Image (cartoon, rainbow, N blue to C red):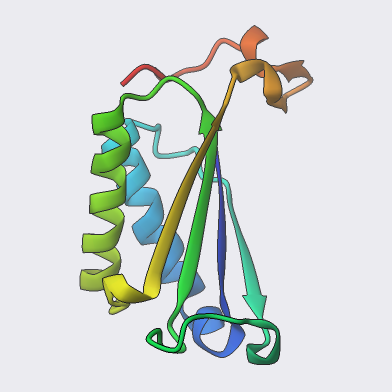
Length: 129
């Protein structure tokens, strides 16, 4: 399981939500070997008066937080980050300097879904990739 939060300035983020979600999901499917039907994205458009960011970033500044069950290798997580930078630039037009990515991991028992804790679930995909 991976839950993804995307933050950005509302005037920039709102028009690209669908496209950005598609790109992020394709990267997750490729790097983490996720099933195509598992997409958990939440968008947080922020009024520019409530977004403080470095002066060398543009209004396209976007933060992507990924929370997932622990178990992926360092190489897999680095592949995901590289794919996100590359594909978001290529498909959505946001420069790498305007993207920040944070991956947070937690044990499966920290997750609860479909009425069970994550360590009790039989997932239809591998976590150890």
